Length: 452
Image (cartoon, rainbow, N blue to C red; front, side):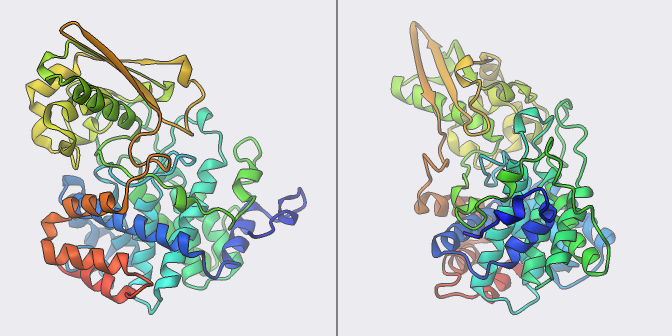
């Protein structure tokens, strides 16, 4: 663990400078953290392989050359290349498109969809070895999660990842390219100051592909490093307002326990706040052998924040459906949980799904008043032809306290990357799982750069 005590006093350097110092002091993280970086990398690439086929993913790729210009950084699965910022933007769009990307409870968001594309866009054109690549992923994840967790999430209008993932990208890529402590600090501050506003979150009911602004923040993090290296200065005290950030949560114990080791992984293509309800509904119907058509009513008691989602029974886009607990529960019950890996637009007009979604009610429970962000629980009660049964799910599948196995993660990757073909999918998986063991980064970069 790094000693940050002296740097946490009132007379200490700004928090951005201290974070840069902490990153600079790290040369290699423990093997358990490397293993976590491999899991996160595999998950992010599988999700991105499926996300590349979405309308938002394809739109980003079509527009990227005109916006960013040509370069040497690969747009995954396409054979095309752009500037690092441009490639990172497109690849982050892929990773975030389906709401299947990993997350972290204390951050209440999705670090890997930004950190992995940002780092790989920089690392692909260098001779960086596997240890340094895996360490960079852990460092970027750490900085991003700490910045998000240092806020009082319950007081925030939105927890959107685009508000805080950019500084993590800046810190990791600054470290990876050997920038000085001041340059990394200014890059963190520039990325934080220029983060996306996410003004519509919290009230818009219209599904859209901007979503949490992750691609913009990812590209922004890379550009912040270039700007800082060229002499731009950021507001180094941006993280120092005690009304906004807890200095203790931001800085204490850096390098002791790595956030990436406590990531959660998703099996359903929707907001994490719906997952406990889905798990509970599936368990109840299996336990009671209930046909979804015979469900008369289904109630979900959960935490207050989950009720702020649009929660439309008949969403008009996949993106809107991802933020509807009733629709996603109904979809899983009618078509099985694999219908959410990923979600298919064809189900949006399914009258059985919409009809069941309309029979699902949501309410907040006093029992879960203080659960979020540490937990996203739900109690599900089913009523069907004289039957009434309930179940409580505190930790949905994929949480550190209810983890997915290595086989589960590999199955998820195989399903999501199936469009790449078995040979290509296997090559990517093997290059990730063997990274730093019997594989080095060039094999991974080569597999990602090939067109489908």
